[in-house]
Amino acid sequence: MASKTPLLRAIAQRQYAAGQAAAKPLQAAASQDAKTTVLPNKLVVASVENNSPLSRVSVFFRAGSRFESTENLGAAHFLRIVAGLATRGASHFSITRNLQQLGANLTCQVGREHIAYTLEATNDTIEPTLNFLLEIASKQAFKPWELSDAVPRLRYELAGLSAPAKAVDLLHQAAFRSGLGNSLYVAKRNIGKLSSETMQHFVNQHFTSARCAVVGVGVDQELLVPAAQSLALDSANGPAAIKPTFYASELRRDIASNSAFVAIATQGASVSNAKDAVTFALLHKVAGAGPSVKWSNGAATSPVAKAAAAAAENEVIAASAFNTSYSDAGLFGAVVAAPSNVAGKAVEAVVRSLRSLSVSDADVKRAKSQLKAQLLQETETGSGLIESIGLEAVLRGSVAPSSQVLGLIDSVSTADVAAAAKKVSSGKLAMAAVGNLSQVPYLDQLK
Amino acid sequence: MASSKLSAYFSKFPGLKRWAYNLSGFNQYGLHKDDVLNESDPDVAEALRRLPQHLRDERTFRIVRAMQLSLQKSVLPKEEWTKFEEDKKYLQPYLREVVGERLEKEEWNKNI
Image 1: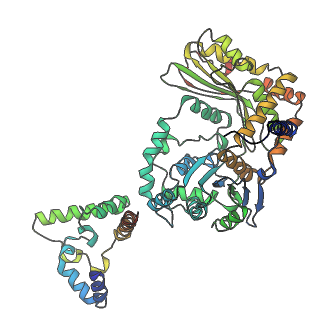
Image 2: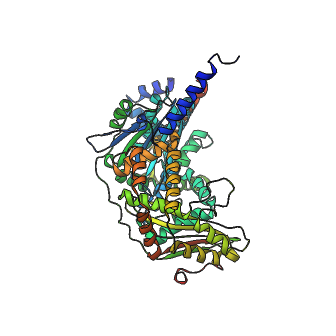
């Protein structure tokens, strides 16, 4: 049956609604902003109650791969693999069955700076499952036989690593060497060597309340605060990160392949200076951060991709700019995937284009729209939102409202972005290459 | 149930336990009680798998020595017999955990 609403009124309403939408400034609803509490033991609790039927709680620690030393290289990767195994209070079996029975989902994620244990459950089952999350995140037992049973999973992951991922990982090793340069993945020589004691030592040192954040999406702050208080953690500050220094060096891994994957970068911006970080993020979009329309080659708006395509002579090639920011350092550059016979020319062309990025007002306008859309898209899903507020809470100790970030993007001028481009044009390069490297130039051959 | 009650009863008489231990004979081969558990029992097999390497090596040594002695139809000199007080129940913590895990699984499978 048709609607009983008179046609005119429906039109009026619709137009009114459309007008409202147009007038609305680009910002998230107020309820999307995080509530933050800092406990006396310096643990940060942040939550966004967006009334989602699905609740997510995440425990973050500042304990990623950059905090590993030569002895425990790969500890962060192994921690991720063994998440959910027996704790001091619950067996692996009981954790699995209890969470499964309540429809909950538990994941563990590791970055260079953080590790995050995330629980997803429906609103009515988040409370009974929360204790399991706290157990898993803070009371690991590391039973030796369970650790050795998990070793094949480490090998499986290493075997499945894609060449581009390896190239970017090697780029970090080349550029920072230790600390931030540590691989996200376990060193082959350490497979099966990371003992229960090594892991326990790493956890005792780094899983402290001063390095921890408990964040939630779709849960009430009143539920999270007592949960965070019940985490039995040491309150020490833990070891400081190795201060990253940028080295102009290169790492090459020649493997049997028809293609070459090259990652190349200069110093970028750290998130400690928010405006710099945003400027480099904009420059990333100006230089071309991969195609934004499905199946398009991205060369239309990307100087980097255009340069690579021109050098590739009818071969299929992919190139995009690359930008990453950590709490005290950053990398800006490009990644190239090319058939081995044209890889050399492509890399040279990409470096030339990185060195001579022109920044116009129109470019910056496009970059701003793309960056805003990307940020909003990322934080629209619950999993994206919890990762974003978790990282902010654990690395900076506070969570900025999204409107503030969007305002910051608007405040960056074309001149700022051009200044960043100038830095890139004269900065030293670090480089990593994986694949068939017969044609890939060495770092000292690149200008 | 009954056996645990019985064992609680006998623990009131430590002398009796020692007498029974010495009577069993495996100690004359230098074995410990946990060396003679049934290895084809899945619980014991799993507990043995979890045993740290050095304890497993010691156990293997004792078993090999006992086989050799048994072949030669002899036993160790009396001063090398395992004494009741020196019998290390090295497998028990692992075995208890394995059994606990199995009971937990059985409980879940019964109810759900």
